[in-house]
Image 1: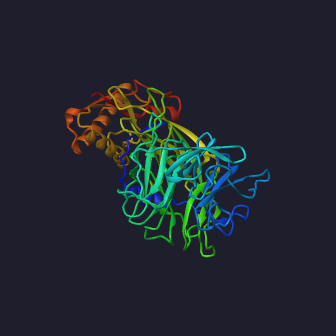
Image 2: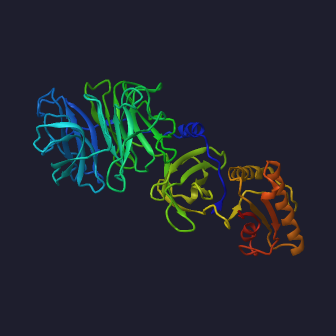
Image 3: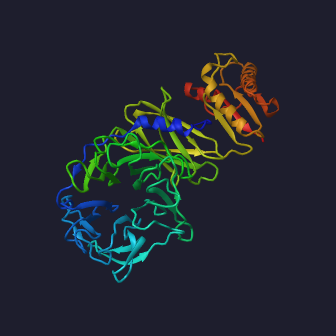
Length: 507
């Protein structure tokens, strides 16, 4: 594994490059009449095992309160043949003449979050959120209010919720005093005491002057799907878009990408819900449907998923603050980026590229780089790699793997300037840092000549840094020749490892 530093891309450049790697989906197929009807079906929520689906049905004469009063929650279970059974109204206190909709299933699969706070007598409901017990047959009971700090809404407005897979992040689409205009998407976080924080706006990268609704955060804790009518490339009343979280503030996102004209229609499209890594459900009110209907689509597999395990090299603990970015080794094109969750970042890698390199960045740590080839990955299979990141602190020794010289000389080659530029940035950003640059050769040749060559080469490195404005007082150098090998000198591979330039943080 190789270590190097990497500069941070601006969000504008990153968003532009991410747009080049858009995932494609098959044409949506409408679910059959066990789920869809002449009524309006929306808000599908799928259990983690994919065996149970809750959704809402509106404008239905079989609903409590009649066709024009409220909406009911329905449930369907998948049979042994892999088909959905005929949907039934949920038995329980949630089905009444007030509007309720399923939001998410708890991480343990035992509870369902539903919109609105339903009183135990089933005769009253208010804006808000409830959680209910799920029985084996899909019936619901024991509603309890979910309280969110300083939660405020405008009456008679639309509201939507989504719970992350981890169960500690709640996304809310709503009108509010800090909305840009219509509904915006907000996030509330579960604190250590089990209370939900005051929701805050995801920001202008996501929200527009029009509406944003039906948010869904993918299992990578980074990819957000949502519907909006506020973007210039929209196809209809509301289109599904996807965006990537760029940092841990939850307010910086890549430019949202329309997921495709074969998915989005002239009507409203939303509730994009992953059922599996390859299959998705969505709601569409396309040209042929008066009301919303539930459809399914599949990802057209043109990529592998790389699972990057990020750990603190010193403590061996997982790193949650790390960001991993993947580049094409030949073109240097950015392919994808991901923020780690529980020490694991999921990176989607296009199959057509042949060689890649990964870079990881975390505040206070030395960034890591790893190169790999397609033959080292199992095609159409997810692959795992590990990256151990060293903390930036006195005594740490970091190897620079892309410093090249003319054969048997100390003249730097042009290929070295990218990495030296990155090292210059690190020193500039840390103005009190002092380093020792050390040079090493392989074991061929005379020891005295090797020491002299290694000293001349690291002197060239230091002189380059000085030309970029780094004070010479912060830079020391020393050549060790062949006296400190890290591998055997009996093989070409071993000798290549021994020829290296390193720097050690002195202050």
